[in-house]
Length: 546
Image (cartoon, rainbow, N blue to C red; front, side, top):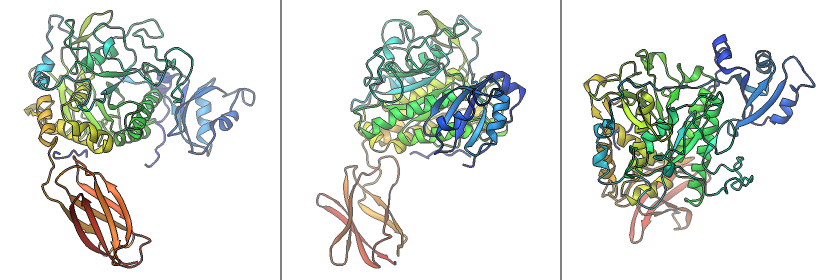
């Protein structure tokens, strides 16, 4: 069961290779090698010269973390069977195309953005309209999509750019493995060129519609507004298969990780990724399902929430039938279904009292279209970015501490923002038992939850609440409370008054203050633990029994 805060792997084989999967993915194979296996040497065994029956035509890395590659072959089915027998291979199977979860609109006369008023975004806009944290960090939201039109007049001013890259010079200045990724990443061409036109010549509106809900430029006198009037949208386009989703995730992960490590000097302050697509079934039985979920956990630890859409059709109970991304067991996932103007679940939208977190407006939504036009659209695809956009809007509240904690304690701050949203939902009878919260997104209530804790310590006490185990043998865990969030000095001294361990600790604003330290090599005896800030100090005695 999923859990959320009250305010605040076993390796499974790829899905059985059947005709449907094969036809959907053609000859594209996804393979995960053992961690220390060198791909170039391994794939050499299967090149054209050595084996003409099931040769590897080409391969490309999609994940360094998971040592994962895509392969093209002249006989994919036979090659997969051969690769399954290799000890160097952890997983192998067909790459799986994603299914985008949009629904065509049916009422062309609807021209107002009722969804924004329904979640009380207008009341939040009195405090903030997005863009950056109170201490100046530009807020970035990643949009994974098949195709996007970044030239739309109501979107072009809200596109993230990689300031570590010089565009169109053929050089990888930031050494991330991608040349000229100045305006995001096209996962097929490996450029930063985004277009609504697909390889077959057709034009796709889905990505532009989704991006518009998150961040169409607001207060500019034209068209519509996203829930963020101002935001940096990280465009990750031509995302059509599971491997491309994984590569896009790792791209975003590396940007945010670098931002945290450099205290904002490099990388990007990515706070959420939006996934308006998915696959049916449980993540454990899906090719790359475990890796996609594990990457969501890794991203979450760096401060990125993953906001995912559930089914649109057939009234599927996700608790019973599964849904790959909503079923990921990470605390950093928010799973979204769709509601209508009457606060009812949209017909056909997925549900689940354990798997789906909340609903958001997703029926007859007016947003961006192609060629500087605007469209009506419905489905969980447009409910999902409203939640992802709310994450960004909350980070932009006038709260200096929130911006600081987002770097100093990124995972705890991300969980806090998720809890603020889930605990702020508007209870709706029709969602009781059909989602974890039983309610619909309320951006204003979420804002109030953030403001309740912003700038205020959760305790007026200054004390070491618990030390355990005592006596200690290998580790000692300390639970403490502080009246402010300034750094403290932490000392352990022996009975002679000699300091045997010391460090600086930063109290957390949004979770319990717990510190675990090693005493494994301490001689047996009595010790004293002290917390010190300026002239304030508290001390507790403990025993090491080695």
